[in-house]
Length: 119
Length: 259
Image (cartoon, rainbow over all chains, first blue to last red; front, side):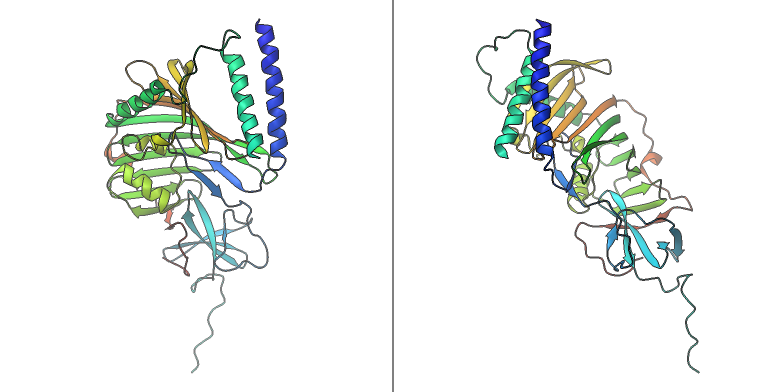
């Protein structure tokens, strides 16, 4: 009896797996995270995780991970990450820290000294 | 597509039926889709939780995610939650993707990223239930176990349940539990409620049915209903090397550099 049940379940499970697999081959590229709890579930769509690494880091664009070799810099009370010539300002957006490309801060250590004022 | 999805559900139900019943015969007359006993158990659990003025929960769980290729993968998380109603909460989240500490002391909500040495804060509403709404709507901030705070309010959306069933009895971490299954338009979910005098949720699984891959979120909860929760647990004090950053509201336009 148990054996029979086992076979039936196994057949059904195989069928289920086949159907799920056939469905998943056309899965969308959106990343959906199931996070809600109990009986007030809220589906949330989340943006991609890839950092925009390139020469054209537009001021105002946001990434979730920094390119390699960045250094943490404080300018006054403001936290920055400097990655080569690109400056990022960290912020909490959603549940995690993200980084927004900003103009180099006025007092940036790496910036060239301002020209002397005209006499 | 809808037809295929329904097909999956039918097969699932069939598979459960084969494994769950001890005879080939179907049980007598069909129960209503929403079993009143299952709904009563849900409400009884909510009422019980509402009476708890202080509790601590240690939770471990998993959340499915999809790679860009469509492959489903699983992340793990451990959450240590401490609550003093109606307006104090501390949460320590150690997961594959985040190590965050959350503080709420009726005045300020703070999240501190231990890995990055940043924290962000905002002036918080006066109760946990309100706080959850602000986090969700204004900041898009995902608070693990957040619905624990909704039970007892009029926002629990239990009227959206179109199927409710008592599945059976299960042992979760040594505690005998009743296992229930519920369906809503976009999710199926299961709940294991401890039997006896303290009907707390011991486990839940949420399946997103609107996604082709049916990703799941699952948590097992361990409860302490008589915790010692001192004031200092709920207020964040930044170490010298920890810097404050902005808390960006959802859809908030960012203008230049802000202090």
